[in-house]
Image (cartoon, rainbow, N blue to C red; front, side):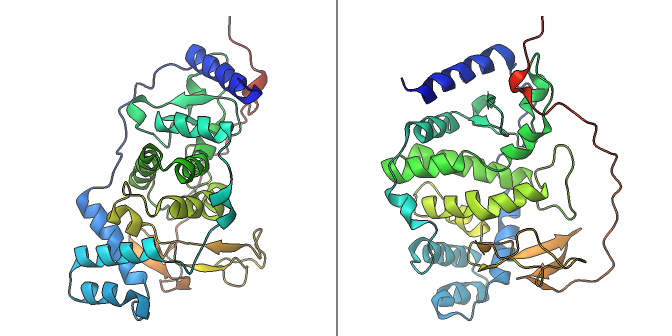
Length: 309
């Protein structure tokens, strides 16, 4: 057993000794049928259906055939070859580390944050707002565990394992994680950099620059991914981040110049569309200031913590 696997075994021991069973009722793991159709409608209405390659999608949507439009768009996204994401990844060998992390993800065992602690969600039903460090004996709660859980750290290893093995268990694990996250974490209508948030700004940027587009291209042709799952996520956009195109009252952007694939097609505020395809279409001045209490200082380096008693 190599050094990584010995380390993993040690982490597994820490988990067994220190982390109690998550006794809370599992949050929703899928969208309802009505919610799915609503999300699909938002995506389809945001697309440029005058593009020739989307002619079948346009014909079905204009005929009020939502199922036909979903099927046509999913077929297009599965077969499209004009857009790629890190093509070199398809030929990289599967490492022991990625294989172990992918197998653990299949079991619902995930690592949150840059800590050595893993947690196995009962029945694989993930709670994206759960912070395992709050339930570890002798370990100070670390908000980064839950925040960084929402960077989807397992999606890279799952995609790598699937490309290498064609084992549908990995695609099914990704699909379960993805659908549960969509069901639990609707788009926030404000900057949500608070304890327990799934939409801290740094996580949102990391997801769009890595985990989400990489997973889309890794799993888009898997038979385990339904047409509805594929359509709800819209990866068509390609562009570059810039302060000149952001709707913010400043003249700089920390990610200026970053090229991205995929973005939210629609931004809503309290149910009203405010931005569509990067263009502000809403009403100015309807934003509301949400006052937050200062975040208490907590220990964020639990690696050195010792078991109580």
